[in-house]
Image 1 (cartoon, rainbow, N blue to C red):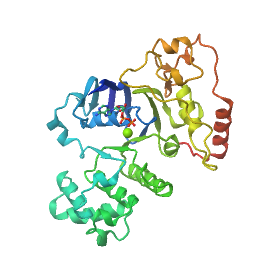
Image 2 (cartoon, rainbow, N blue to C red; image 1 turned 90 degrees about the horizontal axis):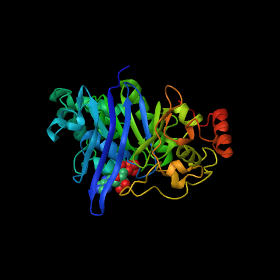
Image 3 (cartoon, helix red, strand yellow; image 1 turned 120 degrees about the vertical axis):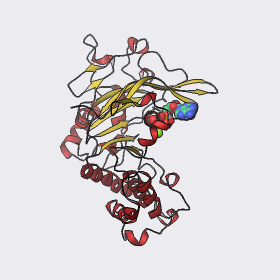
Length: 347
Ligand code: ADP
Ligand code: MG
């Protein structure tokens, strides 16, 4: 199967006062029709920059240094601003963390959806209002027709995020990029928004790129997961590969740092902090925080080692000559428990 979006060797940097920030380094991934691909990593790992590069909305001081972003037979990495008009918010839509900043505070909510419909040319003007109300219903706004004339401040955070999703869907996009869409919401609202994104994806056969710092969030919804660290993808696999057979010590750390579904306890906090991307370290960027690091981890960048057809990880631990190192027992037990209880229903 051909991917609908294919990112190859993408590197993005920023010219900052202190020097060049290497935010995204040789990132590769494919997105397939109808799948949810999650990109997971700590804050600052380059998740948002990756998607901003895809949509051509990098900050002024940022640029794509190398790589290709193939979509519909064209390389979007080479696009000029005008080339994005037919793509952004039309074929590829974006949902951000903060619904307030995505909405116009002084425009009626229904009108904002109607405008998105008209702008995307998805529908005749005369039918736009009725369609907007349908969309409000589809994203779970009760009494949609009555609330067409409400303003954003009259809606709760969760309801606002539903409106942002309705606007994102107005153009009938092929790809929906969700960048921490639930991070600002409380846990129960978060779960409902995730459910909504999942439903919309299924009903509309969307491809979704779902970005989060929280692995637990994607357990129920991702088909595949890219684990990102210091601007690179360090492990990629199906949801089961990542949750049940994680191979990179950073993925082990992320899984261990996940709060327990029942007790809310975390086993552990990842020690140290991510590297300063003004000076990305040589070798495996996680080495300094990795108690299993070997000499080579500080010297040479690990290649991707193939674990299975779906599963790759960039860690020297997978080199045939590396000593046999297994994940910590405490994580082994946690994974065994997750499998048993399916508290995190994987896949
Ligand atoms: P996250 O994974 O949390 O979404 P980002 O993609 O936002 O991380 O950021 C990746 C890195 O790029 C961070 O080190 C961040 O400080 C840096 N960065 C992002 N935008 C800029 C900018 N406009 N100028 C300089 N550095 C930036
Ligand atoms: Mg971000």
